[in-house]
Image (cartoon, rainbow, N blue to C red):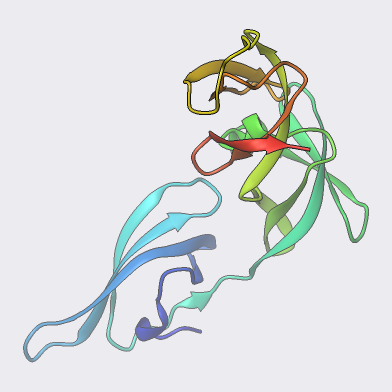
Length: 186
């Protein structure tokens, strides 16, 4: 159990059986009253943001969350299938859960699955992924690294802007936080 002073950003707590991540917290005390902690929380299952105040000696339940290495296998109509790399068990995650990271998933990509009470509830990507350029306009001799950008469609279906010297078939490193081109990959 956490006390209100333990509610720091990055901590996972349980409220009404739902896992929440503390995004921001601010300690406060008005004259002659109990201390309180104002928190901004993110529901780890739905992604909803909640503002909540915790009072003085209130005890908050710690959430049983963790990460496990998994591998993306394939997508069907209403879910994405992953395999636990320790037990080799396969499990599906719905389109709604994976929607925010789906543009970066390629067959065989290793990612971290967010686990709550031993059940997967989300996916965390690595900070960068390497994707193959499937479609782009051809580069012209004389194009330089600083000469401008052009759109490129990647193997996952994502379209990003790349430098003029990048051609179809090249592999590029993409930042998964910003969705931007970083460099060519080998």
